[in-house]
Image 1 (cartoon, rainbow, N blue to C red):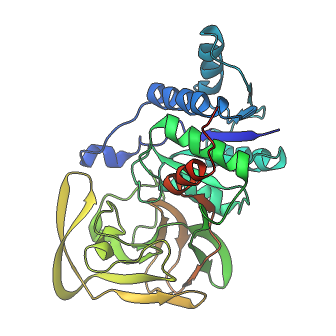
Image 2: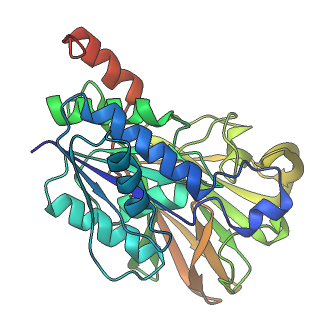
Amino acid sequence: MKTIGIIANPNSGKDIRRLFSYALTIGNNEKANMVERMILGAQDLGVEKFLVMPDAYNMGASIKNTLENNDDMKSELHVLDFPLKNSWKDTVLAAEQMEEAGADCIIVLGGDGTSRLLGRVRTSVPIISVSTGTNNVYPEFLEGTVAGMAAAVVTAFGPKTEYVHRDKMMEIYLNGDHVDVALVDAVVTSNFFVGSRAIWDLDEIKEVMVTRAHPSAIGFSAVIGVQAVSLPEDDFGYRIKLHEGTKKTLVPFSPGKMTEVSTQAPVRMELDQTYVVKTDYAGTLALDGERTVTFKAGDTLGFVLRRKGPSRVDVSKALEFAVEHDFFAR
């Protein structure tokens, strides 16, 4: 049965960074509407079943009721049934259950941190990452209908190399033990407290490692992106030290705000090599915008860039492939 999983993070785009910038806010009503458009865009293209992550706001049940009451629901829609933790664990469990249930593609609505969790569970299911968060380097701004259409292409033709590519990912080590991953950036900070998880004090940032960098990106990777470019298909990333050196650049760390910061020059990071940071201070690692890993003075941090991230669907290429194979003909 052709199946699409949909994970909509109800908490994406609501962290404290919104208080210090002009970031776009996408509420849960709009997320639900986006999911409705995804379903409607996919079911007429042959998708038979949708699996939706449950959440405390009951978006899945609301979506199902809306589509059924409007007599628009033609395929099966199931909201997964498991006890909610109201945390990142819900995303992880949903992804695992969707893979076990045979999903052909998973659409993820959130920011960089939400998609990072799909990399963390190392799902083999191709994903489409749709931006509804604060840090949105990895996800794309996509119309829901278009995302649903692209997911339907994957269900029909499978994960073809023409439009599904394995992304890079940063593996994180603490004193030699693997502790987490990052899809876009890993930031070493001198703040020992996880707290609200988000970073807003740039003076606390010591070093940034990235899997990708581009001047069009907003966020911590931008400190490298305004100086050097690493594309998703490039087999390298970069690292950079802040508040050292004489070079000053203007960086869009957050939407609508350009901040001057002094840095050393970016240093290229090659695939499958370990890059080490030996600390003389306590702090936290922020992974894709969220403080996650704590460390003590004297700890050794390791960073390894590998092409072991999610299998990501190139939406434009998938739709072009569909046109070449007359997929939309009726």
